[in-house]
Picture 1 (cartoon, rainbow, N blue to C red):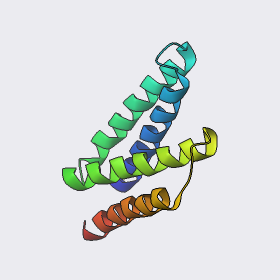
Picture 2: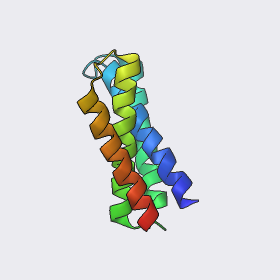
Picture 3: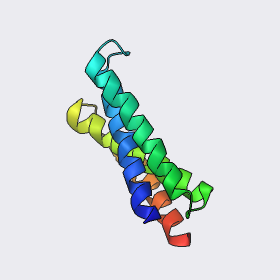
Length: 104
């Protein structure tokens, strides 16, 4: 169950960043509330996952999910540019996350 909590924490991190962008520097109330709530949910599930998963592994996977997910959200929702180098480094992050899971 810890791995499910870790996955949920990563998705919370992604949604927190998404709503943070929409909050426009905390000037829009609804996205600001959603960003803070998503961040709190992310930390809550991360803390649950830490009961079974090593802290270094959990943190690496949590930030990896958040990083890759946020880049993909930026590409699809905010029309951020895509190029080969960006895709290469996304693959590198994914390889690190998969590697951490495999050795845990």
